[in-house]
Length: 138
Image (cartoon, rainbow, N blue to C red):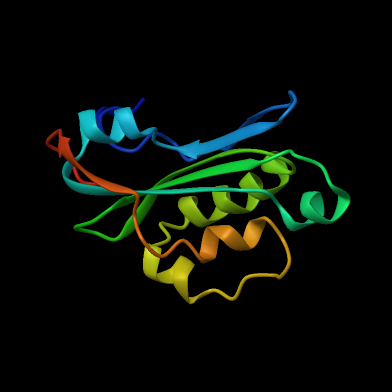
């Protein structure tokens, strides 16, 4: 593996675990981002009950987490637990591979009502953490 890639953002390969509830991820975890990157990292978190579960009376909830490298505005990680996580993460894998920014996510119109629209409507970070590494996203 390229020396630079080993220390920066790993290859943008989405993955999923088909359990109940399903989970899927692409990009860096919060811990990896803190360890490897320099600068501030915004952590967006959304917990909600998808509308289809509300209408059907099911209690199943969804958790989404997005990591944004503040100095570059790059989305560096997306993680999801909930229905359709794998299907949704496939598209996010393309976005991260294309070096999408938070501004680009924010400029998209969400498909309503869908759980996927939450990725383009997260407006306020849950917290900001400081990267302890020496690298910028590649």
